[in-house]
View 1 (spheres, rainbow, N blue to C red):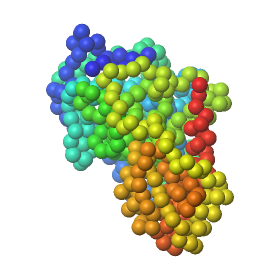
View 2: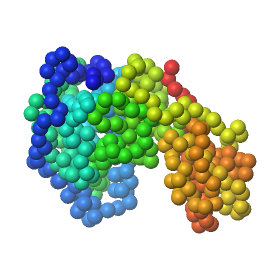
View 3: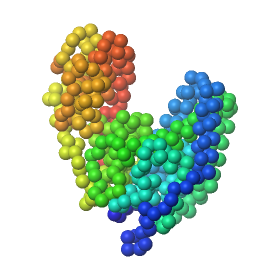
View 4: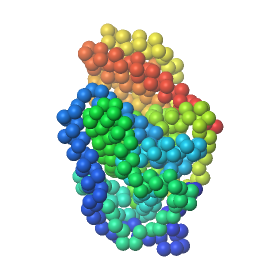
Length: 421
């Protein structure tokens, strides 16, 4: 099955020798083992010895930054798929932050991605390339080993990438690129900041990248199927914020060159939100979306509800009405009905989350919504209010989170409404 076109690289044409993505062996990689093992060891031991709340906050902030700006935008959506245009200095900055994740250099990452992407589009491929073993076995393979194919396909990169001096420099020195931030963090907070801001960050980034990759090819929802492919992508919706939108992997398999990964209502995609902001600032111009891509005969829709927005016929509540609904749940016994779109959220799971007071069901609407008597609350606040119905203590804690949930939902709605033309 041919690979969707790209300006940046190509796989050997089908009428030439396509290689063999099945025959090969998995061998232990001393370099990968030393890299991740040393980072994880320092993170575990040093993290316990140097823990502080400021170090933990640093870890969360720098990890989020390199995953969002570096891996999701720089490495994946720009370098690998070239799904948007931006000034060269911004491209370099985003890709440099992607190197900070600690997976590999930019050219090596591009080659690894293209090999796996090509292999997964064939009728069959080596289990290493499709995450086809058990969780523990796949973890050992992906984190500490490498695949050596007997006859690998030829991957050609364009000169714009392969001959770029900055990218070639990063490829040679990608491990050493952890030194500049390490020195800066040491000056700011001593060894605690180095341990949490470098070693723990790399450990979480590398291990998290594998873990999401495993589940995104084995478990989760599907909107589309790619007929004839060795493995299907899966959507892991509950990790969409942690992965900056990268966990909408079924969407990505369906539309690989789309800069937007959360394609359907309720699919949170922080990477897309940042792209919208950068476009408004004039820093991003062309943005490729799913609607811009040519049709693929092998792509088949599985869920007809993805374009359906049935709704309830009632207007959604504003801020004050949402807060009043929260107090009504906490102090009274209103009727509560939580309706899931059925695309990403199963009503049975919502019922376990919210308890017996809430009637949970699935409809054809596009947004999750909670009906409190006649007040309709949609999106993240609906989940918070549903949890509040479990009891007084849970309700009080949930109401403390309600303003933040309402604010995030407002930001999400505004950003999703600002689609580039």
